[in-house]
Image 1 (cartoon, rainbow, N blue to C red):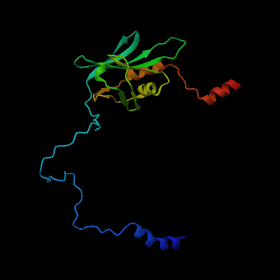
Image 2 (tube, one colour):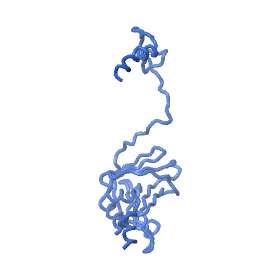
Image 3 (cartoon, rainbow, N blue to C red):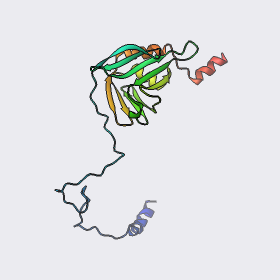
Image 4 (cartoon, rainbow, N blue to C red):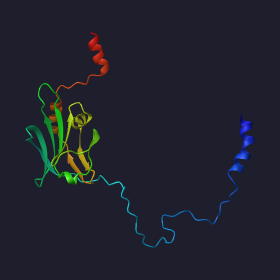
Length: 197
């Protein structure tokens, strides 16, 4: 096999061509063809450029309140502006609770989506409604689990480029954990075993 490959080597090299490399040729440069390195070149705009998600943490505090009759913690900045909220939607004893995340801003300022980043993970959602923009998920949703265990900062990034950073808190984790209650995940295998018994 090795001898056959060696025998084919001259044929393969011939197929590649016999072009020679010009030793005087220049490497491509980041400058346009007609400009010199010293000239000022206007950069081309790129509408798909990645927007930085860097931002300073907003100073403020979480306070307990109710939104739409639901127990909610709202983060208010030191200047008195409501930034975000985390709440529990009590759906009664016959249904699973909902975990709610609010971002206080006009709907038209959001864009097509809103993303929430934490130490425990991140999720993106298409917004619905107006001010506040609200994400509501079931108690077993990964987003609810994420909020119940997040530490450090909560980073909120909208499709329009707005980046907001607020601290999470023990109170937020406790509210979400209580809202989830005694929720226990039951795998399909566990359900089958229970039916057989």
